[in-house]
Length: 184
Image (cartoon, rainbow, N blue to C red; front, side, top):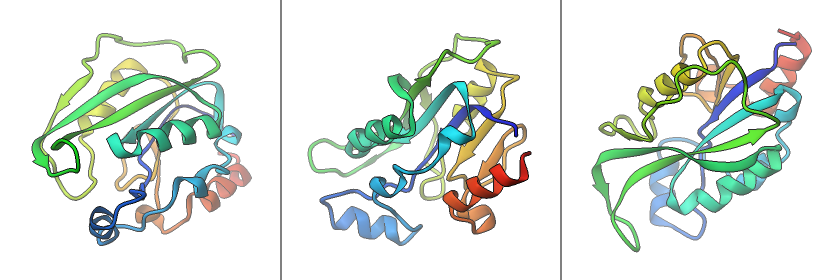
């Protein structure tokens, strides 16, 4: 079975302790509590030496680090900051960014490509929760030859295995079981 060296995940976070934001998010896709994902068997399909890139926002940062740890990666840094060029109202300060945090399992996958990727990505917001392609373009430059997986994907991307219930209707747990059984 082919394992993955690079994984990017964009979980449909439930904004715990909120009502207005969660209702708006629920209008677009099914949200889940992050604890329902803690048992996701990513270790079964990830390489021993791999990186996990995970999308999160300020209110979900703690959940994201906890989930990353539960999946077997150690939080290392914030890889990318997406400046959306549009301000969203929030409780404390206006929100205009999302983050991609990076976790490492084992060693950094080799060979590495161009390390000189900028952290800030400036791109307008698109359809609800759609992320800018520039982030994965930069990951492709950093790791051009590795096996890559996008979880919770909303579209296909050349050179990546993309999985999400919006693509094939499968739950992520079911997809991983099928993937392990097929032995791609």
